[in-house]
Image (tube, rainbow, N blue to C red):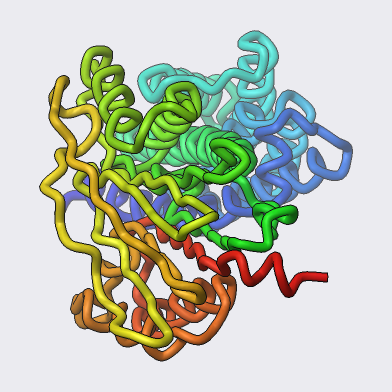
Length: 458
């Protein structure tokens, strides 16, 4: 290996050490503040000292030749200037230059001057560009220019000139290559840090917006319980737990007239903002098309037709809607591809409602939905839910499933709607354990109390 190659290898090893240390610096609070434009005296002093030490290391780790050094000393001050401005660059250059001056040698004056000017030039470039970071190509060109001046200054101010010329001939190629490469690598690191910060800031902004969207979404679904405080014939409770900041599950309920209530639960296919927007539209349509003279089949059909005709997104909704007559406990319902609700009977069989073959909402207009009828006895509860319950998985990717849901319903069949809903949710959580929640979980329970609740009321 000739002397030029061996010198280059030695300098590249030094560059690697400096880059590792410099990368650690990019993760500090001071560096973050510098990137944010907070060029306080303290931060500038820290940058000057740290990169001045890099400059000194660049000398000490260099290759000695005829009383001089083949080195990467200029790299530290130039970077300090490029990142923090003239004061930091000049400070680092003075530290590195002063140390070099104490070592003497034939190129002492030229090397000292070049190191100081490297920091100053880097700072002036920073000032000229308004703090904007150089591209990698521009950084390499700057490093080559600084080192070219270094070579010229070493000869011009050399004593004796003949010896200085020998040193420069040996140092030119290794120093040009190593300093340019070091500059390119560090600028690349900084640009990646800047991009990472931008990405993180954008992510945090999006997360903040999603949290606001979730608050808005949760404000859309009713959460005031008891749901019908003036109607003791019925108790209703519901909960919605999103897997993400916003999701597509929903439920709603309202009085249809003085003797009947309407309730609906649904699940938009998809996740995130699109699903939440589609969910809001679907809820609005249900409320707009619900009329005392319409049954659940007609209401579901109208919502389906509207979603299907205007559905450019290709999303669809599973939904179960029903009308409960508070006088008789009669429940008329329509099922649009939704999970089968459970009839929880304390004195009888707890079982799923029979399937009706209804198509999901928004898939095809003019679909003929079928009405289903169920009579709730006093104390019976209808439990509706979304697939986040039955499709919840544990760490072995096994589903919670229908049978576990029925078992949970049977275990809590004598409890009120709130206790029933919370018990099922806790059973799902216990089953899933530490496995991440992959889907929204929504549960709605309505218990029929009958006329006896009025007769024995306060």
